[in-house]
Image 1 (cartoon, rainbow, N blue to C red):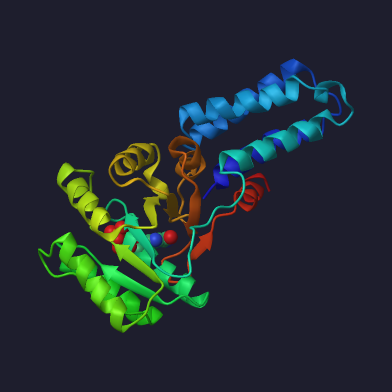
Image 2 (cartoon, rainbow, N blue to C red):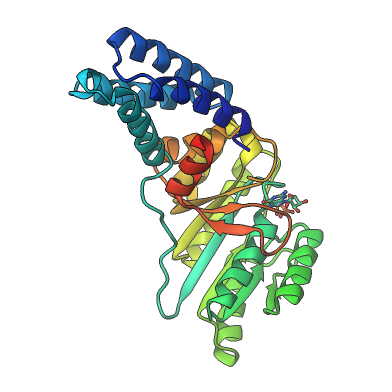
Length: 294
Ligand code: GDP
């Protein structure tokens, strides 16, 4: 991911870096190229426009232009703004000593179930006692997938029964926790190929019953512009706290990942980097910016 965007930006910045002094016209031309490169990578139009406006303001409105290291300074401004766009500092889900409930939501195929398994492994390796809850009341196959992942990670999986109500699920989780202490419960919910009201009603009911401490939207990096609508719809009903962007190892152009924080106002907590259980990494905006800009 980010290959084409990275190559283009590196090329533009390399040319700027070589200039000792810069005119406003040169900076403006470079900014137009950067904006183009962002749009071609499927970055949201408003995000690309604001990004370039902020860089231009910082580059043109200061002493940068007249200085002998103008090119290098503009490159630094671009780098810093890219980090800001990606979320600034790294954010992680909040964890208390006990009573943590992560509620996983997203469209079918986004990587929700896989990410639930990956999170179980990630937090287990940090000494957490994890319980996975397979809460897709309609698709037995989804529950079976989580059961298999739970076995691989070595954490218990509690499966809802077909047609079980949210209150019944909550009760069963509480009963389980009485006999087997767990400080982190990860609830994998049902997904649909598209947002629909029935799904949202169901999710809102289950969320009300489970009282999550974190609600994580799992977004496929390939989703592109549609990611914003998906995030908005879920946020309205179940109030998201953060995002997991999956398939960052794929050939997505990167626009969704780059726009997500800015468009949704929610931090990206993790990036999915493979199909395997260890393919989940905390999202560090500075490292990702570094990777894009080389
Ligand atoms: P769900 O319907 O949202 O629960 O999606 P799944 O967890 O079943 O994932 C759908 C497909 O995406 C599966 O084939 C996963 O192996 C794959 N997948 C999930 N996350 C990643 C990732 O970060 N990288 C890659 N390459 N594949 C992923």
